[in-house]
Length: 146
Image (tube, rainbow, N blue to C red; front, side, top):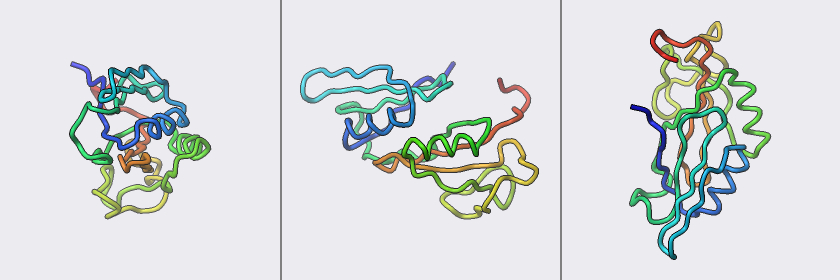
């Protein structure tokens, strides 16, 4: 099994399309059927998983998706690129207790993880509706992961 698509609820399809296009994500599809159905799909660079949003595809309230992860090799470079493309990205942080961060901003310590531990450094941003994305730096994969 492979996770290939995640649906994110948005209020304004064109605004969301402009946002993700500005991030440099590949537009895969923009399909409309009548006035009540539209599906747009974007894929982040290098990702095997895409996001879909649109009109008439979910009953979830806009901005309800939280904890969407983008795994990066270099969090500083990824953060800089997203900022250059217009995203409002947090400062890099790590968790006070180790690898996994707490919900919200609880336990966030400014800066990279000690010794730049793989899986330990994060930054966050949201799309225009508040769907929340997390960057996580992974430099060495855990055993069994590709």
